Length: 319
Ligand SMILES: N[C@@H](CCC(=O)N[C@@H](CS)C(=O)NCC(=O)O)C(=O)O
Image (cartoon, rainbow, N blue to C red; front, side, top):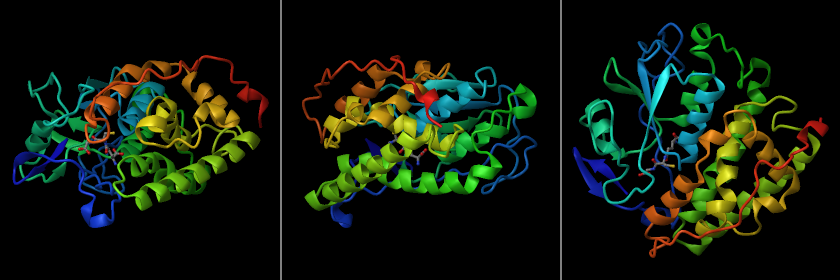
C-alpha cells in the first residue's frame, strides 16, 4: 500500500496521525466525463465520446467502489463496448498489481504515471481509461456509474435508468448519508487508529443501518419502488459486510443477516440477472485480510459463515 510522490512510488500506509486517528479518504483527481457526443460533463474536460472499444476499465473485484462500475457495465449491457482488467487481489508494497493487456505494465501506479507523470497521491481503482488519448477519463466510481448509466444508450439501445430525473434529489440525499456513514463508514471504523475515531464511526454506521432497515421494511428500494443507483452504491458495501467488515473492520454490533429487511434486500439485488457474476468472495476476502497487514498481521483469512444469497427474498411483497 503506498502512493506516488515526486514521480516515485513510496510504500506507506494511511497517515492518520494528523487527524486524531481518523481515516480521511483522498478525493479522486481524474474527473472527466464520457458523454454520448463527447461534450463536457458536469466537470472536467470535453473530448471523451462514447465509442465501442475505446475505453477500458481497471477494477479490483475486492473493491466496493470498483464493483459499482462492474455492475453498471453489466446492467447496461456494455460488456462488448468496454473491456476490463482485473487487478490482483493482494495489494502490498507495490500497490495494485496486474498483468496489463494494453501496455504490459505490472503496477497500476505505472498507468497513473502514463496518464500524468506529475501525478501525486494514492493510486486507486476503479480507473476508466481512454485508449485513444492514453489517459484516465475518471477514477471516481460515483461519476463513472452515472456515465455508464446513459452515455452509451444510443449505441446499445439499453435505456434503463438508475438515475431518473424525478428521483435525483432523493438519490442525492440518500447517497450523501449512506456514503459517509456506511460506504466510507466501514472504512472509517476499520482504518481508525484511535478508540474515539473508531467509536464515532461505529455508532454512525449502525445508526444508519438501523435507519436503512426501517426504511426497507416499508418500501422495496431506497428511493421507493424503483431500483436506482443509490441501491447499487449501497449493495457493494452490504455484500462485503458479513464476510469482511464485521470482523476485519470491527463493525460487529451485529451481522447483516440479523437485519431482516436489509438481508432480504441484499439477496434481491444479488439475484438481479448478471449481478452474482460480479461478486467474487475469494477476491474480497483475500484482498482485505491479506493486504491490510497492519490490521491482520498473520494474513489468515477467516472462513466465516456460508450465507445463501440465492435464498428466496420475497421483496416483491413489499410496496
Ligand atoms: N472515491 C474513489 C475511491 C476508490 C478507492 O479508494 N479504491 C480503493 C480500493 S477499495 C483503492 O484503490 N485503494 C488504494 C489506496 O488507497 O492506496 C471511488 O469511489 O472511486
